Structure formats: structure tokens, C-alpha cells
Image (tube, rainbow, N blue to C red; front, side, top):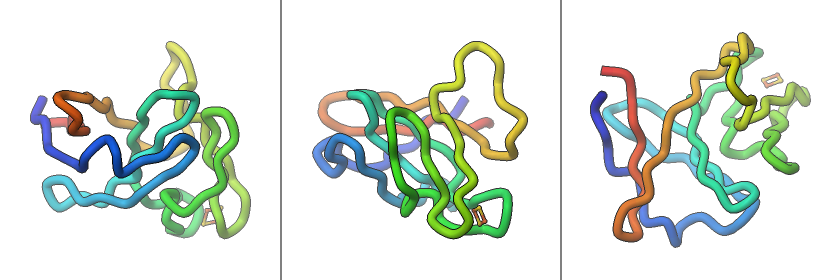
Length: 100
Ligand code: FES
């Protein structure tokens, strides 16, 4: 699957999220519990930017109406409408793996 550069790892503090664009797609990048997570930056309810959501543990809560999404859901992919992507940290840079 194609890997796209996103941003320096230093751009994300613990328990924060940012908005990046990879291959024309709007992506939310988070650092939570010492790990990096990425997902589509559009809430499936009404389109709010999840990168501006409230973070607790590995859960992102939408800033508009409070739907919440666990970025670390375990083995079973959740059916919550949020596409999650793998993040690779390499030489201080974050890269996002998008479906080909
Ligand atoms: S837009 Fe996210 S919960 Fe409504």
C-alpha cells in the first residue's frame, strides 16, 4: 500500500491531534498514550473535523455532537464509519499508509 509523508513527529505533542493532507485526502493524526494514530478527518455523523476533537486515552470525541471513536479498537475493525490508517514513524517523520 502507498505510504505518504505527513509531518515531523515533533509536530504532535502527547494527547493532541492535527490535520494533514496526504494524497489529497484529509487525515487526522493523533498522538495518544505514546502512539500515533491516523483516520479520515471527517466525522461520519455530520462532517466535523475529528482532528479538533477531545482526546481521552485512545478515544477521540467529536467536537460537534460528541460521538466518540476509539483509535485503538483491537483486532476487530469497528463499524463506526471512520477509516483508520497505519502510521509509520521513520527518522523523525510520520508517514501514513493509505489503501492503494
Ligand atoms: S459531526 Fe461529529 S458527532 Fe456530529
